[in-house]
Image 1 (cartoon, helix red, strand yellow):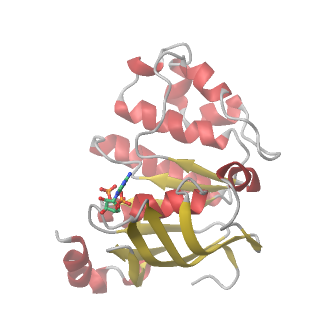
Image 2 (spheres, protein in one colour; image 1 turned 135 degrees about the vertical axis):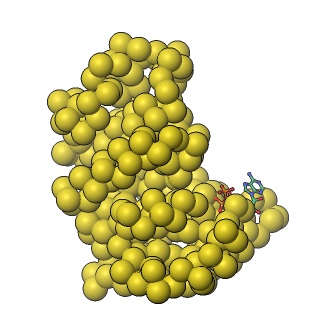
Length: 235
Ligand code: ATP
């Protein structure tokens, strides 16, 4: 675990109505680190992100960011603290152009990326600036979804399965983008089922099973733990 966590989650529990689905999520990420939450379908990874962001209404435990406790704050204030969330469904507005989508998010902090910087990271988006959201490929939509949260100025990003359903060459592009963001000091929590992709970008992996973090594996030790990982992921 990082010496000085930027975002630290301790004994996070969460419910959908009466249904108790998170039973003890623990992880920590330091500034400039990339970590993943790995686990099978239904393990609770997406719910963890929603709970951190305050979108899941009923939650307990502790989520500290830059030393401040967020667990009781509404979603709006958590976003304002500088954490951005890119959901699995991406949330691109199909009737709006790429440019309009990029203009949507409110700035939460200074230092949101300019359009020029966005286009350096995502050259394809520049060519598609006036295209409608619906006309984009899955990969372009994912790039747009990431680009959009970079506009806000948040430097801590929660990305839910950014590679899902994308072709290998696009997955590689997203991997390079994540590496670039990391080198620029962004802190990233990634939900993944593709552990090969996870291994190519992350410093550390947290295994989620039935609403709990049951193990932590350093990326450098992944090869030595590959059998264990296969068992966790059921692959
Ligand atoms: P996936 O990769 O399928 O998204 P996940 O690890 O992200 O898996 P979650 O989506 O967080 O898993 O789901 C955790 C548990 O909560 C599952 O048992 C799921 O059925 C349940 N669940 C998810 N969303 C809801 C909801 N809106 N209402 C009730 N239960 C839900």
